[in-house]
Length: 166
Image (cartoon, rainbow, N blue to C red; front, side, top):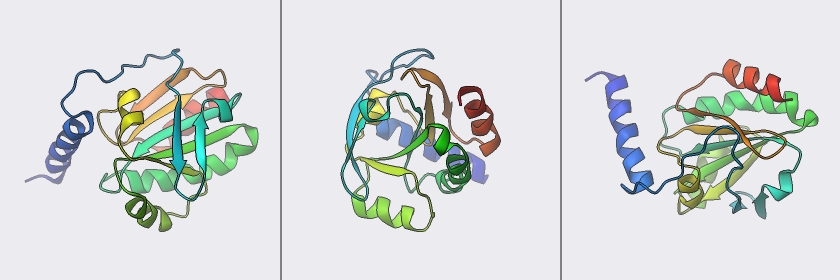
């Protein structure tokens, strides 16, 4: 069986798992204020969105260690983050429905410096209407959804979008 077909079927299964077959997940449109959340950081402390990030461009990336595209894309975001963080970019990588040890083991090999948060029960993913991983939301400085990227993407796409906002 073709690897792409297997990955597509796996992503479909996970999407159903993430949403628990409910139809009450959010549908965010560009320009809408995004849901707030308070999540534990992987290392220590808690992140409070949006209040702690007012006036910043925020990339919220939902991921899990089993996601076939998450590792390379998370590594590819790091140089973009380093380029734009002094200009007001924040990257929040939200691990969905995995325990701290699993998330930490995955992150330890990536060499990323942006914040990793734990969405242990998947509540934030549901509030954002995430139906598959990876999913990336880009929030403008006013705290409104600028755009989202569902599935695999490239650093060039993210950099082009951020170039419009920063």
